[in-house]
Image (cartoon, rainbow, N blue to C red; front, side, top):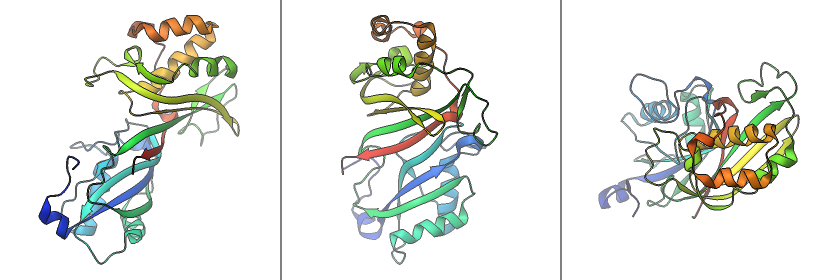
Length: 260
């Protein structure tokens, strides 16, 4: 049984509802509930409280930082309401939520389903505007890079991000993680419309890890570092060798894959 699963009585009385969520993270202080500040989790729990007339705890697949967006965040909650079909939670919650959070889908899952602990992988995308002025409506959701990087060189570096990797070089000093090893399924750069996109999938990420990876890739690409030299830096585990951390507005939690 996953941590946070209901006891026997709750299993008889409640249902487990999984939500698929999207949000504009610009005006939120991140996902995690915090007293006295606007967060995604706190705003969603307020909407759930309005619907249930009691406090409801929402569990997400993971935390996103202040300014980071989501197109495929997953969360679950337990409800005593049995008369509402799962899909009706979508319009019911969206009526109570601000426009910068949307519930995209809802479904009933087994009682033991856990949005965080059952996740197999997490995919993020980071959007960049390269070598042109960004439109005002783009700049909330992409990073302005005033040059056109060599995508072939970036993808050469990105192909090294495969398998179990010591990610100490990308770890922030205040990261509380006990281990800095992560399993990375793959990373790549590609063009989408008139933007450059960096996509990376892993079992989990350290705090600000993706933004640090991207800043490091761009830093060494601009220097023209060879693939062999970049490999040495990547495996050195030395935080001082990392490039600057790019800002949050280009980053989206894109998809969560599950074992079940």
